[in-house]
Length: 153
Image (cartoon, rainbow, N blue to C red; front, side, top):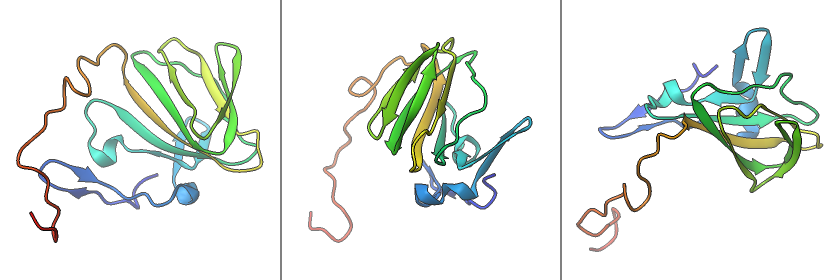
C-alpha cells in the first residue's frame, strides 16, 4: 500500500509527500475481498496518535461496494475535487469540491463517484467526543516574531 513512501522525521514532526491526488491510484487499500486503488492511510506513515487520516481518489463510475459504521470514531469527509453522492442512513447527499460531512459513529455510510471525473477527498477519524479544547484554547502564540530564512528581521 504505502511501502513506496518514506517519512522524513524531525524533532517535532513527521512528513510524507504522497504526490498529486491525480497519482493516488498507485496506492491501494485492501480489506477482506475488496481492493481500493487510490486510497492511502497516513496513520502508520506519520505515526499519528490521536486521529486517522486518509487520502482518497475514486475513479469515475466507482463506489464502495458496502456500507459501514464505526465503534468509536466519528469521521469527517472533505471533498476537494469532483462530485459524487454520499449515502448516510438512507439519505442521498450530493457532494462536490468544498463539501464537508461529519458522520457520527452510528451513521451507516457509503459513497460513490457517479460522475465522469475523479472524486478526490480526505477522511479524518477521531474518537467521538474526545476533543477537549481547540483553536484558541489549545494553540499558543510563541515569541519571538516569525522571521523566515533569507528575510531581514
